[in-house]
Amino acid sequence: MPAKLCEIDDLPALLAPGARLIGVDLGEKTIGLALSDVNRCIASPLETLPRGKFKADAQKMLALAAKFGVGGFVIGLPKNMDGSEGPSAQSARAFVRNFTPLTELAVTFWDERLSTAAVERTLLEADTSRKRRDAVVDKVAAAYILQGALDRLGYGKR
Image 1 (tube, one colour):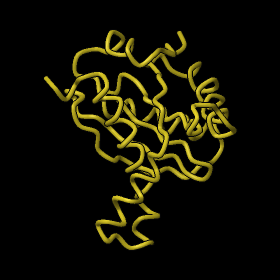
Image 2: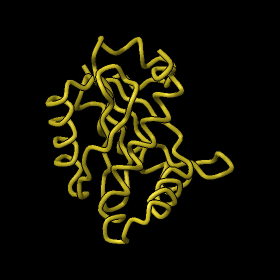
Image 3: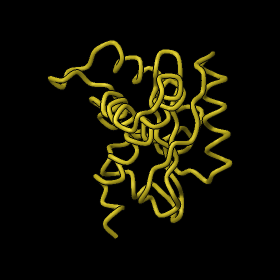
Image 4: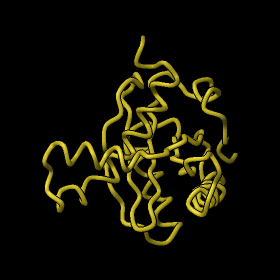
């Protein structure tokens, strides 16, 4: 049975107790991943995968999901500032269209407008070197995306 592509508000009903979430920042060259705790309150950067062939990327993501007891994926949807969707959002939607038949885990989108810019600004304020920023920005952006979704769902207020 393929994954359930759902709206963010429908996600909690599809998750088993203690199931974590993976946040995903799909870039052109890399895929940033973040992981929630079992209570789904805190998102932490997990890993940055270099983009390769779709099937290999999807298998790596699913292997991490199995390893960490994940119940769903929160995929960043890069909308334009006016809310419209450009080529990056279309690419994210295409990724999810190909990904959902490979898993039974829940999948939802989260509007990630300005997530990378916010993360880069934070890393600059922390006086992080350019080399270090380049190494961590995608997985930190994934954590920013996932934390936004967790906050929206009210998990941090329990």
